[in-house]
Length: 383
Ligand code: PLP
Image 1 (cartoon, helix red, strand yellow):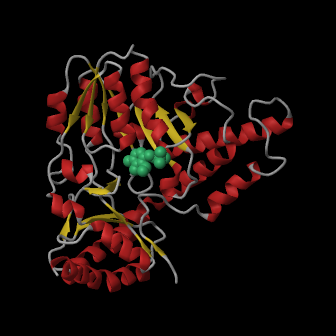
Image 2: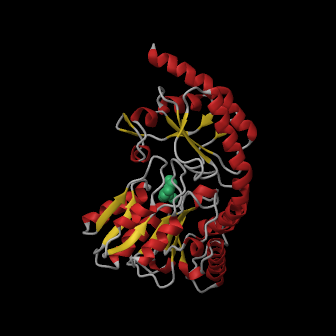
Image 3: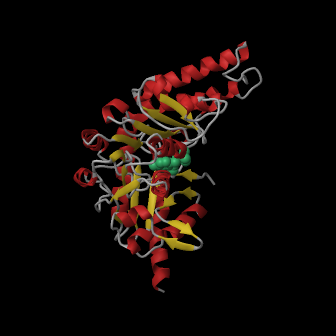
């Protein structure tokens, strides 16, 4: 059975060009330590410098503003905890209720260390209202953190507008661009952000490498201590293979943005109109006008999303639900709950996420099996 992968917001497959870029540094000869002064070291140092330059260019940043990290989670933690570490854990953070746990749990930790935190709610569309953000700003607010695109629903957030408000109030601005990069244009100057987080595995790079952007002149405390690599943000011998892979994946992702705006969006929109036609009662979560071009979050009331996920998996189709399964109890997704989606609809939610490699036939196969599956599960639920 040919399996179909429609869970690209969870992770993506490494493409051959990215793998090729990594291999020389995993083989003997390319294994030097970039801090070594001999030729082995100098060669990999050169590759690391080039990877940083290329990554910076893809973001509209300067190389000295870019650090390679272990993942998106670490980059988010560096922004939030690093910012307040340099300010004696004093002040106020404003963030949003629909952030990824990499931000939300870091905010919880800040609170334990004495920082005040405001988590701004969202409306039914999943978009943060800039006026609510503005109303949360206080004289001691020193950081605002708002994701560029939500991972579950795909909603795009008004980051440039909120960055302006934050700066007017004297606060710095962080954005988690992990889901947005490669799907919509991401340029740090246009966004007006001071910090930004990326993760390579969301755009056909390897898992376990991220990027942290910190605008020149930013004041950040260290969260780990060592020999100061990666501007002190991620000390330890650099993972040159993964940095090189990430840089190629970033170039590839930047070039793919028009493909997402065109072909991927058209595929996703067609999938939605077919689902609307074929499945009675299906509802779409989020704001169709302000959403990543690859993401469709929809609910099938009367059916548990997890049941659909398992049945689709048996049919060879990988998607995800909006709900998390904790100790056997199926809880509706925190993002959908924050949006005010009723529990029944939230439990029936599916997240279908395409990539620039998704093919028409794959969606046709989904449409062949999903409507009948929903009908069968609904019949079983009332029986
Ligand atoms: N932020 C968002 C919006 C994400 O979707 C993810 C990954 O799911 C992360 C952060 C964490 O990235 P990583 O898996 O590289 O730690």
